Image 1 (tube, one colour):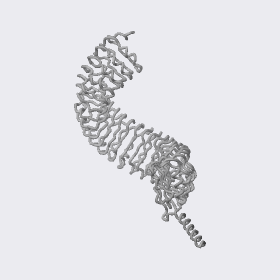
Image 2: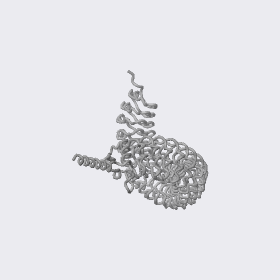
Image 3: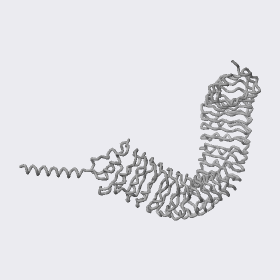
Length: 614
């Protein structure tokens, strides 16, 4: 009997062992549990990673081979995980896809990842990883995609990575990498994307770059790279994006870039490039963005660029370009931004630009342009920014500009414009900034400006405007009003300054009369008040003393009288108080002596006595 019981016990034990073995977690599962233990999972994204499971194939972010024996994919992007990446991740034998992006991982990249020869994709982007890029990653011989961007990585780009002959994407932007791009990168014939934007890389563009026949994105922007742009870059026939901006490249722009028929973005701003803009760029028929800003380019703007039908942004400011603006640019009907400011351009503004119906930004300021402002610009219904300042434009401001419904900024200052301001500008109800200063404009300030409810800056200074200041200018958003150096008469309107947003008010050098309105004194956001050289009478409102932001007040050369309010001593940020040539009487308030920030106090040509002594 006892023998039978013994046999039953042995059979039961064997069955239990088999059951435990059947339910035991796989080795990949144990490695992932070890991975989990090293992390902080505040969102509980990995809560279904359990030791009691037979395999990890149903776990969040985990995918296995069809037979369920191996983990092939680990995708934990945006899971809110933090901590270090343990070396155990390198032990997952069948791992092909590892995406840990958009978390808060810290520490180094485990060199053990290099043990995974089957790895096809490694994405560790948008974390807080530091240290060097492990050269051991070069052992991942099948690796095609490597994203390490937006981390805190330092050191050089390992030369060993150039052994990855299947690499298509090498994306390292947004780190602190230094040194030069490995010369042998040109031997990675499969490379399609090389993006090292925003690092500290030095050296030049690798020789032989033209050997990368599959390259479509070359992004070297915002580094410290030097040297010239090699002509052989024109052999990268599939290149669609070439970003070389914010480096220290010098020399000419190679005409061979015009061979890149697939190119849609060419951005070379903020370098030291010189010479002419190659007319051959017009062969890049798919070009959408052409930005050569802030270089030392000379010569003329090639008229051939007018054939670029897909062009949306043309930006050549801060160069030394000369000649006229080609009328052919009016054929670029998809243009959204045309930016040519701060050059030596002359001639007239082509009326053909009015054909560009999608135009939103037209910036031609700081040139030597002459002639009139084309009325055809009124047809650019989507124009939001029109900058024509600091030229030699004459004639009148076209009333047609009032048809531009979405206009937010109009700056035609420092020209030779004459005649009255068109009242139609009051129809531009989205205007935020209106600068017509330093011209020869005549007539009155249009009463239609009362409808400009979005207006923040109104600058009409140094003109020949006459009449009275309208009772209402804009809405409640005005921050700056400068009407100085005109021929304005009448009084400062009550209610004009009763707004909390106004920071600067200037009506100096006019012919204004009457008293300083109480509401001006009640505008406690004002920091600068300039009303000198008028014919104002009455006293200084005491409420100015409640303005703690007031830093500069000039009331000189008026007919103001009475005593200087002691309350001005409460304006603790006042740096300049100019009261010269008025009719003030009485004692100078001793409270002014307590203004620690006061640097300028001018009270000459009044009838004042000194501080009261104790």
